[in-house]
Length: 467
Ligand SMILES: *Cc1c(COP(=O)(O)O)cnc(C)c1O
Image 1 (cartoon, rainbow, N blue to C red):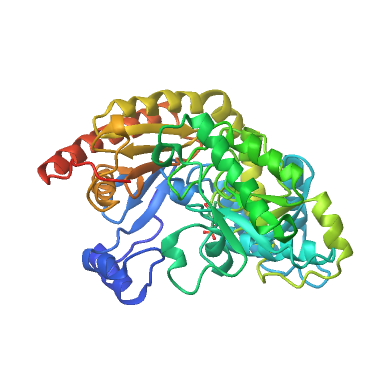
Image 2: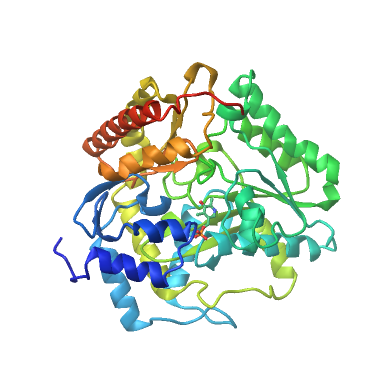
């Protein structure tokens, strides 16, 4: 692809960025001192920075660019839609063709009777919608006290007041008066770090039963819903033991509460099926979607709601809620085109039948590296646990994240975008990644682990600490 625009020098852009841009989830003085990495273009699974460095994007942007970069069909659809109808709202009894077509397409793809979509611009606001929606659902049946939503420590559901409250990230809770009332957190099914001497199967059951115990403790007549990601993403690709979701589903079936699957990452092929709910046989009442819905080409998300819930909502009068950009026509048109490409090019089928197996085989080889305690993967989302002592699944004595950060920096410097969550390295590459590109990803990861190990030894960090 040819360069579309000339840009100022990297130094000038970094200086301007430091003066005027407040970054999300960033220590601004730190980034300003060293200068932001400026990404200027992308193609396929590769991104390029302003210095011309090419990097294999092991994170698909932020878990979203499932069809890969540079699909001109999406650009053309956006261009045509902007000429025809760049904006109209969906409030007050109006609609428009792109949002109608997208909602119908989603209903066709979704499991079960998840047939109606409330649109947002992303995942956080969709989860805010979910909080209001499930509370309104119970209130309109004369049960306003059924307002508690149970979620999990180290889950991620966004960073708005509602999304950040549902999430279980202590760093987010520490700022701005979170969590909001009536959110209760339970422990996560993170066997590697928290499973102790239990087998993964025993541990999965034990963690699922925390839901039942919590419902008993606060009272079923107080609980509106349970929300969880099928596989935790931002928390560090926490893949639950196989016993976890069947037990959660049993509890939700037996108790009178709603189940919300936050599939902002896992939907649209990430786990090797169209939805994480397919992979784990989950039957949610509401599903949160965003990210892969448009492969990140436009900001769009939503709450997909079951017929059962909609019937009650419909009877409850007007839902006093909506976003100016709910079902934005350009975003909806682009999402629809993204889904068309995914279906016609059989992108999910290819992951399910071919590339996820190749990836799993290659990824597993990283477990042989002396710095790695576990290499796990589900579909196209994976993690490796860095450790000074693999047999003990030990953490480092150094502050959590010290070693992960060193590794991340080596990855960036060597043409691989791999994120770190404390001392776990994680990947979530575009679903269109080829065998050759998977080889490149794993070779680079190994090389960067070598470089990290060298640094870690030189700095005396190869020391085990306590959980
Ligand atoms: C990214 C993410 C969100 C938040 O989505 P935004 O579009 O950033 O608001 C919510 N839930 C999950 C599971 C996510 O991964």
